[in-house]
Amino acid sequence: MSTALALTHRPWWPWVRRVAIWAFFGAIAWLLLKQARTIDWAEVFAALRALPAPTLLAAGALAAASFALYSTYDLLGRHLTKHRLGAGTVIGVTFISYAFNLNFGSLIGGVAFRYRLYSRLGLGNETITRVLGFSMLTNWLGYLVVAGAAFCFWPMALPPDWKIDGGGLRMLGAVLLMVSLAYLALCALSEGRVWRVRGHVLRTPTLPMALLQLAMSCVNWSLIGGVIWVLLQGEVGYPHVLAVLLVAAVAGVVTHVPAGLGVLEAVFVALLAHEVPETRLLGALLAYRALYYLGPLAVALVAYLVTEARARRLRAGAGNNHNNR
Image (cartoon, rainbow, N blue to C red; front, side, top):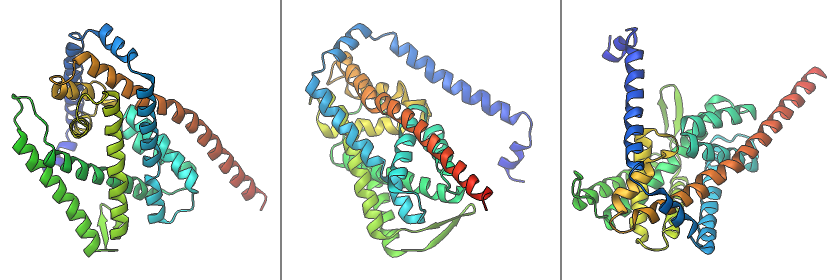
């Protein structure tokens, strides 16, 4: 019997895991609260109010463009699986899932909402899994390329107490680029090959599809970085803002904190406070959260209610047709 299997048969193991997880989250929360107490929030909100209206409009336009682009990711999965939902419906489900994903975490948003909405619209679990998996692959493929380029060609100045320096960051960037190139090579050399992973059948996409994934995701990550760069009003170079965002994105995934709350801000303060006053930096990040997290969430909540109502009508119509036979 393997070690993992043996642990699952011990009644105390689930409790140990739960205690460890909650202790981890508690430690993160304590550190974030400790850091928050040192901040002059009156100055932060003053910096937020001082942002010019044209800056907010430009940042909002970039945020809207990013959401519009991300909302088309599931169309790639629609093409791959050949399911029959309309393009507008797929875009709506992706938008709703993305907004909830950003604010409540991937398990609630990116996964749970997709499964709920797609299943209520008539898709089977296997199809939903393939669509979801391909969208996630698209997102992180672009991350590999953008992060690889940013770390390799525009390495940021890291704090002296960090265990990685500019040279290490360049090496990391090169590795990320090589991984993305390996994916493209796989698509070019093994087009259409079937892989079986844990009972799921996966098919290698074509090279043109892989390049489309790459282009869409790279543009999207670049747009997200552009939102924060505009809100910082050019006080920091765009490549460095983008690189810090990419570090913060991974930190948020690793810590599993919903919306990366506090994690995003902590990373930006750690890496950019020597270039931008902390209060102005946090004011820009609060504006970013309002434009990229809270605003889309409000729209997604309304869209979710509309989608649920439409799904109920579809089921009711299907039930009536069945009864009339």
